[in-house]
Image 1 (tube, rainbow, N blue to C red):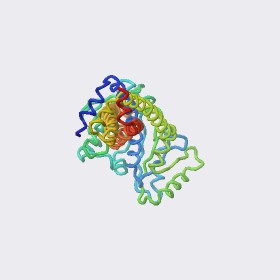
Image 2: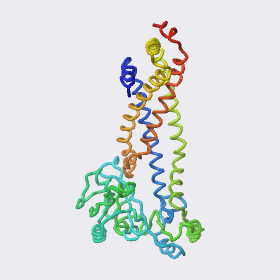
Image 3: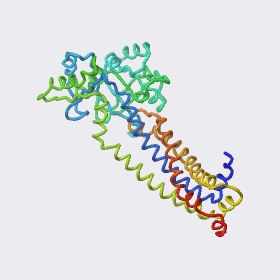
Image 4: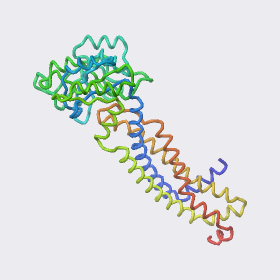
Length: 385
């Protein structure tokens, strides 16, 4: 801390250059925070996947409907504890940019199979009483300012109702996952009665897009998955059953190798940043060789001079990176929210990783200039005045 005034004076010596260098680091860490936040978010989602829950979808794709009657045959498989049908309802609120993640389901079976949905007994009872009732996740309710008692019109992208339109009206009777310890990943979704959807829609009656299957023993997951798929093999509605982690990874692969894509972006950003910051730091040291010569002449050791040079780079990288990560944390939730998913917050691990990367980056870009100063004698340094 006793060198702090010298470090800050060094950064102010060419203030505009320090600001521009800081801006480049800031932009890089905004991008790093967002990309690393996405991977951390998916890793967090994978860690929450249950090993006693299977997902059954059509072998064609998740959008392809399956007969609702599959439920009864799945429930007879040995080792299956409960089955919850889900009909996916892609929709938006007021305008297409306001995507909403919605699903029609049976309340009792869903709460049994998916206990992560946190609702009070009174809310569950209210939801069961009203045919058009819906429960909204806290994050989604906050996003649009919805509250219990509101009537919410959602427009389906492709599902028409008996009135001839695509707008469906729901009565909000519950807000789920509104506690500080409740899972945020499902706090951005809306759930409503399957019977309401099935009775009112024009097409695809008595069909669902997904079954959640709760099993008694995780060690039987592979065996039960095969048995379920064998029930419908060679039929017109073949299924594909997998545990939740496999399901998530399968959906990610259908988009592309996100991990490799993000890693490539991060590598390009860090390489460019090393080049920019390294060049700037080297130029700053070259311009101040005589000053460092004076430091040595008045008693500063080589180690002290090295610390000052490295600290300047680290402080600049830390300040710019923290501001960049702060902006990334602000805009990060909108990435998931824009997809109609829960607007989850950026993982704390992203902040930790960002700070570590900033410190290492500062040490790397200052290492060579600091090494050059250590080799420079006082006479040679003062000669460049």
